[in-house]
Image (cartoon, rainbow, N blue to C red; front, side, top):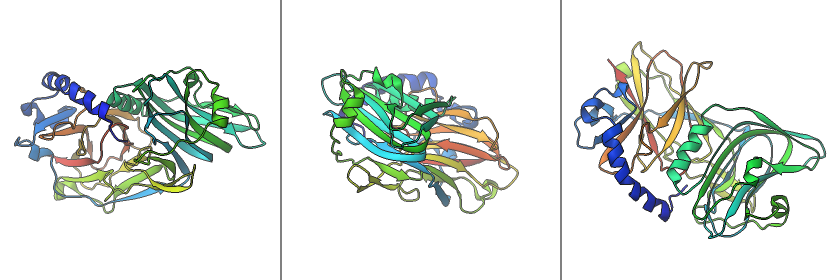
Length: 377
């Protein structure tokens, strides 16, 4: 998900605020020496404390994708300048929909998801997780709050459609008005018992969305080509061989670099052109490191692709309670200054604990990121 010129201007305007907030809320270099007692570490790249968090040993990771979950991804055109269908496909079973669009017109618009039962049988759609952010012209805020909601508390709901019946995936979107330059961002995890057509539309504020979806044209992709249907929406990541931080020392691995963590290929089902998900947006990472030894290890997330604002979770044991971690905590975003290193503290855990992280690349942010592990004495 690229950052538009407008967003770049907003980011520069916000830098002055960030400088102030860094002084007030972020920890000083002296406090940074206590990495496991704070949330966000901000250091000059010349600071001697950087060596505490930087690792030169790359962990070799392995990943497996759950091919039973289908990802529908709608982010092209990202900035929409005419009315039409943004993406459309038919799914059955477990699926995830992600849309991310900016109103590039001067008129008020609506972005909504029309779902239609394509079966002659009743169709029960169960939404197990959902998050919506915006509309707002503060793109980083929208990206971060959507992650917080997606990884926050959820309440399952059901939609029951009669044969060939239709409705909105989220009824509130029928009333939501999106003004010029505003972004809307939505993620939905659901299961459809029968074939379900999913249509993301960009429409005038005063039209009947069902009639519009039936007759509107499919809009062409922009040059980023970030849309399509991708099999395997959950990715399970672990190290290839067990690792003992006490013996091996600090280490790291990448998420979203397209070298060690490859971007997924799929098909744009509106014209059956192959597409690639640059960033793996909408892919839910389930991360579990196999560590050895009796000591403790601290975990950090470091953005290395540029400005970044997101959230993730950590869980001890498969039945443990999930804890939300903002990346970054206490400040709205980080990664915007090339002369500084930024680290989000993800916690310190026993090496024999079963630690599970859940992560998905946040919209409006830049990749890749590093996950760094540091043995504690």
